[in-house]
Length: 97
Image 1: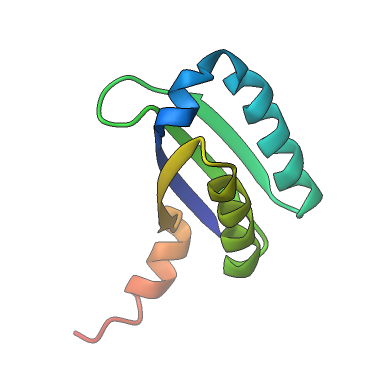
Image 2: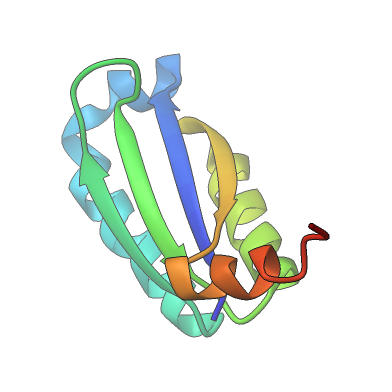
């Protein structure tokens, strides 16, 4: 399954209601499961407030999940598609000499 790394920052609305964030995180994880994905959410310090690691069946499911999260208005996200070392090795082996 493809992997995605999402970097998130609170919006003004999200930080104002930060005490609700654990419930929101649970709801987002449940939505991911409903869509056939798995999401782990981490609260972080530094440049980003939240980092999520997601496995989704395909890019369409990942995009739908992120759009659903975004429309709630609590976080702004940047998402990176990620390859495992074994997945990347297959791609790298096709690079011409």
